[in-house]
Image (cartoon, rainbow, N blue to C red; front, side):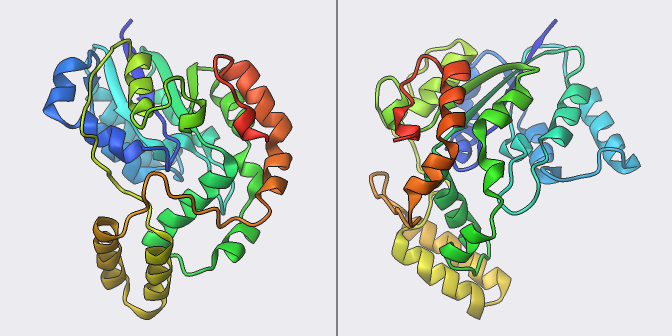
Length: 278
């Protein structure tokens, strides 16, 4: 039985960088499973929320299934992660898709998680680049915070062969900038040397984020989007820059402390997870 390797995100955990590297010819040559960028993009386009019982949706996935070769395959689609900040989680739909699409494959899933406070800040930054106008406090107050229970998410996907890794450098073994890339390749069973990592889909600096949020009010959608691309290039968040725009983040960490401890104990026992609850 061939294996299907699915990198599932999470969003704002370097997924764009991983997908960019997998699209490079050098990656195709050194990674064993055949990367399927076209099908990955289709899954990204039509997820995370759709009606899987819809006739046309089923036809689309039938066509995707028929296009899968009988060999080891690799996919990357963070939209199927199924976790949302402002609507109900949809990983039940995601799992239904995975069961259908990868029947006949030994499905192996990997995703990164990051601490809930920095995850919220990262998602907000991304949403501002795509038109969000609320200030961060309002954005958080209207979020469904219980959706960010990573232990519950991991339990839901544990029916598959699941690997969960912590995104933060403090919790990764070697502490380097490229550790999340190494983690992906190690999961695939390969040791790969990748230098000069690009910065793809970066978050905006604090100043640029406020400029963009104001532009979302004042400009038409296309012009505001074009501005976000310019700001990405000219005013990105530096790797060592800490936004910490979430007030009382200790309260949020306390909310998830017990579940984060369970997460590390059951799914990431090799890592020191103290950063997630202290």
